[in-house]
Length: 349
Image 1 (tube, rainbow, N blue to C red):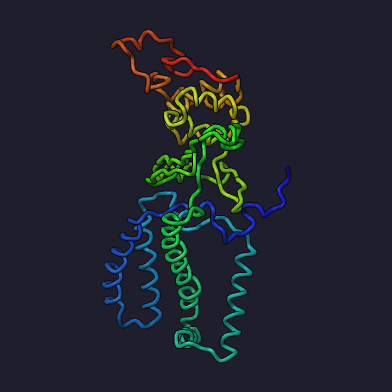
Image 2: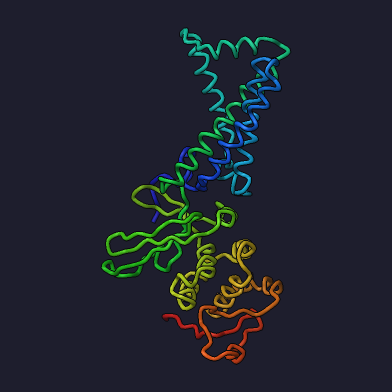
């Protein structure tokens, strides 16, 4: 059925794939910024207003980089960097220019604008003042307030600020009776407590922010329509890998097998191969084995090269403990996937 609503990316001002920023990034910034600013201002105290402005905003940019460094590659998405066409840039620049001219024409000219115009009128300082006031200053302001501060607030209080990865079977197309109590599990990049919603329960599975940032790529996500709009959720390929990694929280190895049986045939082999590089080799092998077992052969073949990187065989289900020491050696082995089949896989037909 075709949706007549706006697509998830129709409004560029709505960020539904934002990476939440942790509180310690704010603390690092607040500590590093004054430590760097004080000696810098003292050194250039006699250089004039333009040098002071440049130093102030450059110091803020450095402090921001230090605060976001622990997040790694997820720092840029967390601060709001994303691809944009030429229209927002051109229209935004022209719009700001029109507003500035209109304000000065009606006689409203704040003291700061007067000082900036005086500096800009000096030919020797025009290029430098343009770079600082039209480039560095707005960039740093946006990164600090809309990136760092809003990123923390959104991750702390607003659900729209977090991509939620739902991965239990039945989430995409629920087949359970409407009166049945269900548990929904969501992968998030910070520790959160679960809670009850009527008869149902919502649980959160923690994933480190670095890994969360690596796998949370736009091409690997889907959009889910709800009453509140569109939300970003894991695509089929990510759902399969998340189930394989956290299968102990998704009804065990048989629950994983059921998900693979139901969704595996819809997964794209090339996406599976790319995403697999970000997951533990043992999880990739378990998923590959179950894909092959459920006759999703093209998808299984995409993961077969990762078996060559493995050094030892692992248990299909590590949670199953042998009753007698040494008994695991008696289990059947699957050499194609370097797995020890210590559990019988059963799925619904």
